Image 1 (tube, helix red, strand yellow):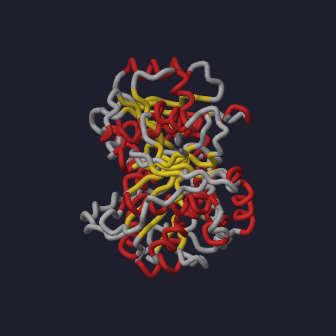
Image 2 (tube, rainbow, N blue to C red; image 1 turned 135 degrees about the horizontal axis):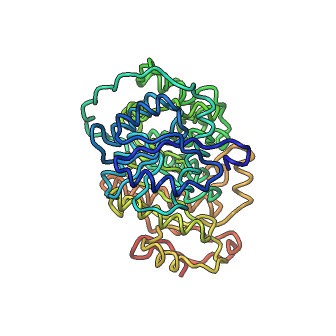
Image 3 (tube, rainbow, N blue to C red; image 1 turned 90 degrees about the vertical axis):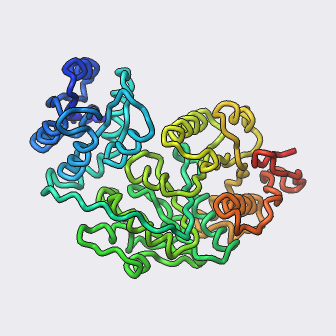
Length: 435
């Protein structure tokens, strides 16, 4: 917590309604580690005060005269990169949420919100951006808004995003092995992108040096083309190419959404499949990745925090108006011992479970220590077979017209029953359950 070290979180309030500004101040009055340093009545005044006061957090209303919250957030993101924006609105429509995130807002609060919601949001955004704030200068020279590029032509390559409902559910391990499995199943070109720009693990899981990373394509004057991208993406022995996260957390803030758009325009033209290992935070880059993905694989576990977060994620996808079939929910490390069954989870989150990945700590640990994907080194174990089934399921979802693989393959049983495997078949909703 910020206050534990004596440092206060400096907050600027921007809202055109005086009563709202006063109510927000009252909600934060007794927070010892939060300091209200100013208030503005419109977006233009908010940008001016942000430049002058350099707050840590701006609480920004979305609908205001002179300059609205979207335009003001874009200006603050460019001109005061050390400042983070939390957007406030009485409207929770998907268009507002999407535009807010792409404008640089880190979180979105729907009015009226409670004091706990407000304080938790401020703390969350402050803690997440701490490394970036330390690395970035106090102010930067404003830059001109780049011209909106023309819409890209239809792309040939497909994009799969892998996202964990919380830390430790094994999403990165699944993303790495999924990319390798796609390469082996299709013999096509496959790219793997580490979307955790602060603390990415893909390089470690594949035993690749991080001497060249996405940060090398993040300079303001960098001309991103296929040759540059190929040069900074190391090849793995499995045949996939990898775009690694920056070598240090403070470099994450250098990667902008406009650059990601250029990078993915190239990736989807030169690779048949691109797999992204996503970080569990809805910053602007994450929203871009989710929008870009043809399929989102949501990795959950059978514990209450993971299930709660899965439910919140599906609420978000509804706000963003994603098609239900765009998200494939899987349960990882499933061993049948949890008191919460897959059917209980489906009933809670109102979304079908698309697959079960068996628990196998020995295989996973061996793979991580060696930096070698288990789908190649231990292909016959149930865990690896489950990832291969997942790859085939993903292929059918994103390329049904091209996919000739059979999805009737048996998903592997958990290690404890490997000696006497039980037959498993897909249910009508596509999930794999034990009979």
